[in-house]
Length: 290
Figure 1 (cartoon, rainbow, N blue to C red):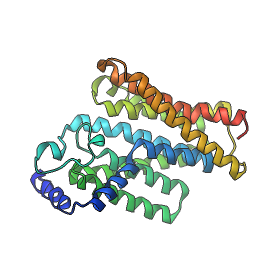
Figure 2 (figure 1 turned 120 degrees about the horizontal axis):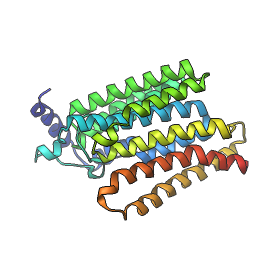
Figure 3 (figure 1 turned 45 degrees about the vertical axis):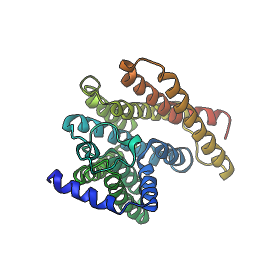
Figure 4 (figure 1 turned 180 degrees about the vertical axis):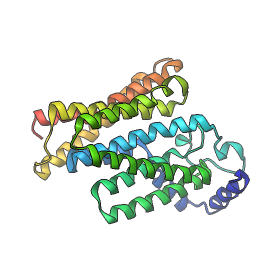
């Protein structure tokens, strides 16, 4: 699909720009960012359904890692960089290259994994609607072409379907399932040496930390969800605060390090956040019975 034609689509959407549309599409974009992932994954894993939380978390971690490997391979400039007439309306999330869209792929993998895990028709409708809105958002904001968001949506959906099928087949065989997780980690390991994309190290850190956390929880904790709603609310609120503090403190601490260590330290930072939130924190709330 010619970039010149796709540029005109972005220009047209940005011609509809107003305070309301800019606010709305920036709000939609939030649903493809780490803070939202934490809020939703914490709610599912700590409070609603541990198995669903596992499969959704693994899907998301795999999706974020793969997305940035693909970006490193294709190296397509973002539209607002190539064309002066396109404004970047969400600069904080427009890092790295353009193809495929990380926000769209992340949102599609997350929402479709959620719908498949809970097997609810209304969640599938939400997944479709949120993916389409995310696609429109990223194009309107000037940070992606149409081809980027189409590819992101398709890859996100396929990854959600693949991980769901694997989990359905092997969830009662944890040793086999964990070996498959390990294989996924191993297949992406060479990218640590070949890919110089900071977002890859963040996504891969989340992926590895989450898988290790799930294995630790199954083996040493096995927390229960059969508790009062008051304890569930307390568990959730403390967990979200803990993860936000962890992200902030580790970010400030590692931010003092030399630039040439940034990729490695961001891997460690997001690895630790995932490990703390989904492995160590369940030990904590099980020990103190909340």
